[in-house]
Amino acid sequence: MLVCYLWKEIALGTQQLWNCVETYWEHKDHILLERSGRGPLKVLASGELKPRYAVARALQNVEHSSRIQELYWTGSLNGEYFGMPAPSLRSLALQDDKSHMPDGTLNLFDNHTPCLERLSLLCLFWLPSNAFVKLTFLALDECEVPKAPIKLRSMLAETPNLVDLILRNVADDSNRVPSRVETEPADMKPVSLTRLRRLLIKDMWVDDIDYVFRDAQLNEDVSISIKAMPYNDDERRVLEVVSSWSLNALKQPTQLHFQRRIAIITGASSGFRFEPRRCRTLEDWTAFNWPWILPLSSISHLCMFELKAYKGRGLERVRNLLRQMTALQTLSVSIDVLTKIVDTLTLLREPTDPPLCPTLTTLRIAIQKDSDCDVILDSVRSHRAQLGIKHLYIGLVNPQNGHWTPRQTVKDQLQGNFESVNFGMLLYEKAYGITSPLVCDEEAHRLWLPWLYDADGESESESESDSSDSSWDSDSD
Image 1: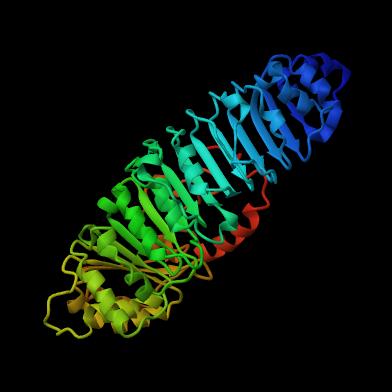
Image 2 (image 1 turned 60 degrees about the horizontal axis):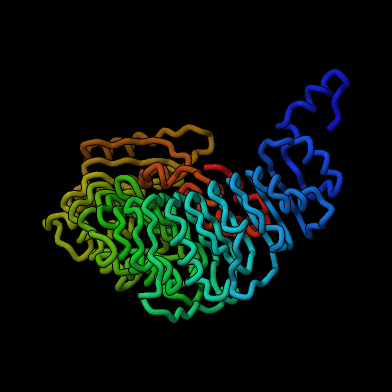
């Protein structure tokens, strides 16, 4: 640090300027360690740690290790540097350690981390055996551990105060095959996560998920996002497993949202999001056993966007799904889905038959161009009585000149057939989507993104960037 003569004494007396030691300076960082006095320490380590480094001294001397509040280490770790107690440690991130422990576990800091609140482990071959009673944030990514489900469940049994939990590819043998857990229920440690608000699971086998959370006591208002199951796993079964967790979002749902890559269920204060690897048509989504997963009679708002056409039995499946939504009031669709939904609600039915969804009164349609209004005239207006629609919303997505006035002929023909017709402009078509609870949409950390983003675009970029970003854990809640 370079300062002028007048500021030298002030700088030397300000401990906050000297509270970070890192391997970048090698042995030259000893002066920073000395000037830090007895204040809090932040330690940044990268690569192999040599005994002459100030970082090594800080970790091996209890006088200094007891002052460490933050520790971030990338590269080869050495267990001998984790033997001192760390009573002040609040945030710990370890990444890219190729060490293999005999039983796949490592005791950190003599099991004395009473203040640790945030723990992130990336690309490791072991899990801690500590009890982290104050931990509120835990992220495990690419951790390949022998008997991973057993060790993970044991770890969660010792973290009762978690608020955020991220599990991404925590498995045996590079996640190529599911772990065959051979243990009796009596051997399973009880898991209680009654404060958990957000749970993100990605690239994990459904058998492993089932084992880790079986009979666990979870916060019923937890919001859960499950993404990208292994290619040859049973994606339908994961929904059945989650439905056994007694979640408010699945017991008392109000909104259901389908896209080609995601399905979202939300209740009053929490939600469930499922993002499979493969794109889904509406017919594909209806093949899931939704009546087993949630009470469809509670759904008041259904959204369907970006879904491919369905044929044959698909029409009847969608009709059966809609028929069970006896409280459905609002239907939001993109223009490419509209005609298929109208067919579902009207085909093979007499014009005098009551509407398939008797409580449905509001239809919201996101269009891409002005001429899409002609499709609405042909499909919705001509079947108004069969649909039972009273209120119509039409939104043009991102008009080129930033302004849109629908044609007068369109206005005249629609406004005379519905109680209310509203035209507007949308930044994106899913602006007509569900209204998610705050816990679902807030960016609590970098890996918990708002739920109604472009799933296709994010999924690819996320998978490329997460594995190379060494600071992904450091975002605060």
